[in-house]
Length: 295
Image (cartoon, rainbow, N blue to C red; front, side, top):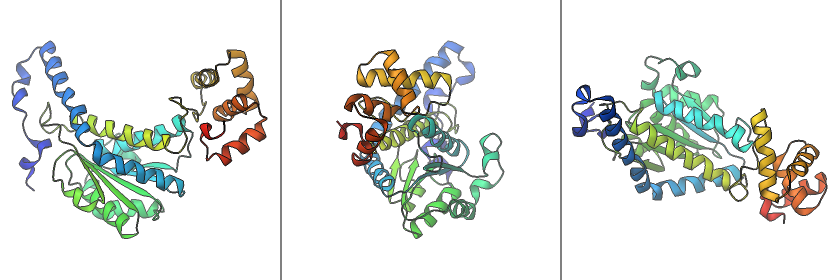
């Protein structure tokens, strides 16, 4: 294993004296390093675009998006998947995150789990993977066996495969139909890929899930109209979204929120088209769930 060739494992010449810096100096240096991440992700936008189109196509066929990774990479995939449920009102099975070692690995390292190709394959088998799905393997190093095993299996059954790595010419890129590679330079703290690499991965996952959801009608203008009002804050946000989308007052938004059984998108269509809940629902079905197709 030739780790010294990986950008994520190299020592950062700008931070050789971390243990001598004041807190202020360390903060400034870390912030300087972090600013490199967004620029590195910008260079990968041409690689990210076809991935999002593939996911939109998959969703429209009834397929799923499945992230898989180990350690920080796996946790970021699980996090992004979990947040799709309240933000976009999707079923928890539509976007899933698999992490080497299972749920225990979210908080405690599971020894050896990431080194098993067989485990990566088995986790996808257990998820009921089909050729309608998209599998995204995430690995900062770009060489995690768990991820490679998953990508190989996904490809063998005809699922779309994507890799996200933080090294150029990464090993996992060879196993993905659509590889994404980002090089943000060596870490602030040598080898600590929860830092710049983790930030780069989070930025990319934000793009992938958010823009894919926009592509299937989960957004109206820049409002998240399929938000799930699962707590008091989200109930109030839902009403404000209805107000913003329709230019109505708070009382009207509240009334239609109740009439629509707390379905924000339905309430908006009811107001914009002056229709009943049933009529608005029919309009949404005919409009492929895009509000702008109903008005």
